[in-house]
Length: 263
Ligand SMILES: Nc1ncnc2c1ncn2[C@@H]1O[C@H](COP(=O)(O)OP(=O)(O)OP(=O)(O)O)[C@@H](O)[C@H]1O
Ligand SMILES: [Mg+2]
Image (tube, rainbow, N blue to C red; front, side, top):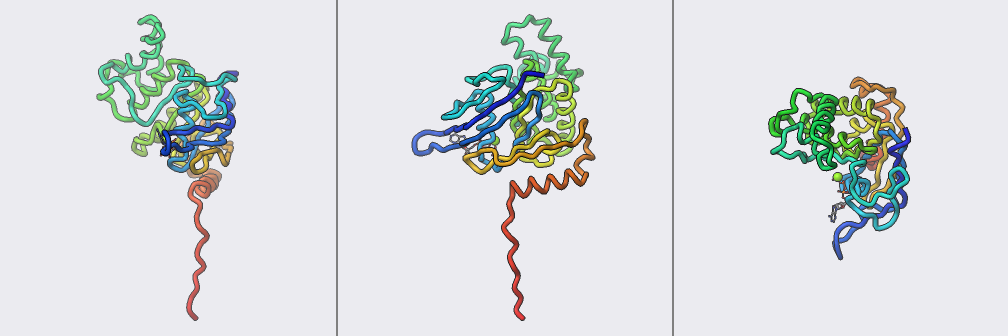
């Protein structure tokens, strides 16, 4: 696998205008190998979505560089697919046409794009729902369509910004498993943002923890849990130990007060 490497160096992004301008990320460095699954954890407002926006090509750096496979990112492109928490499906198009849309834009003939969209619906376990409309699907199913419509472009990098945050706990666990099953087959590089420590520990090869704004990467945790991962992983001692470490990084506790008793 040679495609999907990421190199970010000295990234500085300013958002807003004039006196309202602020540094969202500053001095951020990150590298990912092709096919690696990275999860990013960090306090709210520390610049996680900003970082993803820069990788997607929606935000331009004030300083520093963002490269995918050695090429500087200058704008959005189908080789970098973005999935958000919010749904972006076209409500007036069928599930199949939503998934096929990326190929339509690129001028792929109708029969070919429909066949490819069917394959992707099968990959995300929705082959029986091609003719449905998005509003007829549950939240988890809609999110599977979102993933399929990005994967149809054969992205080298899959960018996910809290994609499962709006789902209930049970659906969320199913989606995590599904994502790992899909990733095991396509092995694209994934950059996945979450607030959920369990989710990050379950999914990632490596967790990167960001500082408060202006965000930069301050800690890296490598996860050697064997794959395929199954849900009982979350009950193992190693998992719990690493969870404690993430909690300490994200929610540092003040030293316990010394209690003094009158004698
Ligand atoms: N268009 C904008 N103009 C000015 N400031 C912005 C703009 N968009 C975001 N910000 C600010 O930039 C900072 C970083 O925002 P960002 O959305 O990247 O954080 P985040 O880590 O993704 O937060 P969350 O965990 O809440 O999703 C925040 O303080 C936010 O308020
Ligand atoms: Mg965000």
